[in-house]
Image 1 (tube, rainbow, N blue to C red):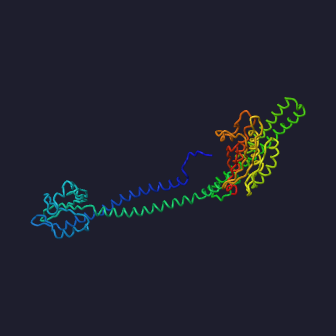
Image 2: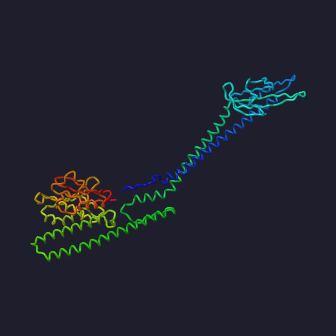
Image 3: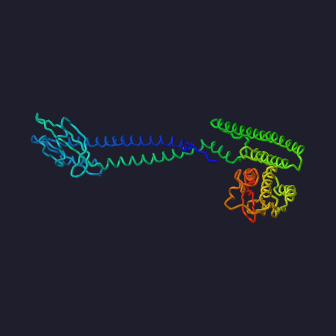
Length: 462
């Protein structure tokens, strides 16, 4: 039976999702925060270094003849702060915007409007720079001289440091994420192990087994296991009730029918046509009642499988053949039983198995006749092995069933010949009893109709 579930997500996927997703979001946020903080710290460090270099230039600026000059040899030594990474540009400009030393057009006075110092990004000579412009004053002979110092450097060293730290951080976070995901999956699997064990226990159980579950469940699963056991108890009670109900109905119906038959025989003459008509109708009612009760009794959902015991199929078929052969002979047919050399055991209820064979035999007695209603040939009950399957077959030598009707003959109330009397339940009962034995039923035309019950021998042994 297929069931429709609205929620297709497993508990495992939900747990992993709710553990991994928040961690992933936290990781992304943390990565962005670290990246921005790192950029700020690295830029602050290099900006301080730039400013320190600008201040060192101030120490090399002097005044001669009331003019500013730069002591170039000392200054050039101080500019080795970049450690040979990238390029450095510099300029020193006086208050008249005259270049004292360095690269022309590097400094623009508008940058320092109302400011003494400023850090900024610019493009110079086609190269992107991070620069600082710094305003300083010198006093000589009562006169103030102003100088504008600009230092700019390319960003390779900054980016290299940032990339190094980010790469290191990425490796560390990847390792952390990997171990976190691994530990999360392991933790979820361990947490769900009791559920998996419960599922395995239920799957291993036969659908006929309604005994309570014996399972050492954690507290979270105690209510689930108890609920399952309550349902199993109710199912057993329901089956017992239905069995009792069928037994009561069977008794209450059979008794008045038997009394009617006795009274009919006492009050009517055998030569009376009404007697024969009523007797035939009463027999038909009795047969239909028996079949309906048997159909209800063999419903797979309401049968008590405790009645099934391991028994010899050879012995059951042989005993049945001895009992049913006289009835077959009385109808004008021959009867044969073909046994299997090896002894085969199956889980069965002998009464149900006999009822199944009875219905197949009755079908043969009913339909394996010629146009005049005379019996045709032999009815054979046989046991055969085909690989891992055991075939219990009953074959007649009648006209068979049209090929297009073979699959329909096991349907309830289906009759190939609607002109013949019958309940229409015989072969559907056969199919139900077959299902109870975890077997399958097959109908074929082989110079007559052959109905075979195929038992999986390996499954029967288990």
